Length: 323
Image (tube, rainbow, N blue to C red; front, side):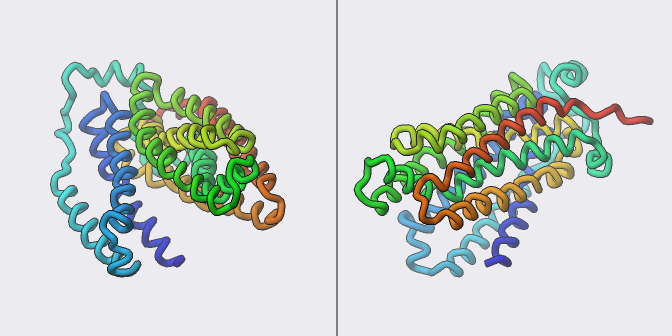
């Protein structure tokens, strides 16, 4: 299982950044929108392939897990290869109609062309990296525990007579509310950043996410509020994948975003380990405590999101390159 997980992350890392970097170069005037559309394809595509493996195509039932992965590996490899053949960087002098790069540099937080070695020596990288990590902790924690928490909360709220029915309702709420809004949030926050800028957008997103995560524990025992909070947190979680590539490009330069975002994206991996493990540890320690065991994980995740807002607000811009 561990080897399979590392292969999965390696595959994402090799293919994920390239279309974002190319898209930003073609649409420097709409970086938020184009990045949001690129990463939304990643999110919505997951829904399609999961359904094909399950009830739509019955691949798992007919071929088993390993053969289904083999089928997907050939399908993905072929499609990524064809997509790569169609992608190309614009000419060096490319400018969208009506877009002035000099004016954009003064008004739209466009950074200089710093490579990874220069980027890693700035405090801005660590501020943004920590903000990404804290925001990822919240969303990935919720993905990991949504059924368990939802089951415990709905059962404690008295609306369901047994844990199995409460768990089924929580799973349905996640599939409908969180997964769909996750994809929409990538496009929505990308468009918002084109108007507000990446810094104010991340501050707004993480502030709302912090309030929603803290509210989750206290309001998640109601099925309507569970749907609403899953939609809000899913929308904001999806926004991470649109806003942090733009933050990387805006702070350190669009020309080097393909190299730099690989370093920035390690925050997502750290968050993916910390969030679910933290919540799982609390559940294991207080396995007999019912829904109360989830209070601290949600409070911690909410506070971390608010810390992410403060880190982003205080990041500033790197000092100009010398020479």
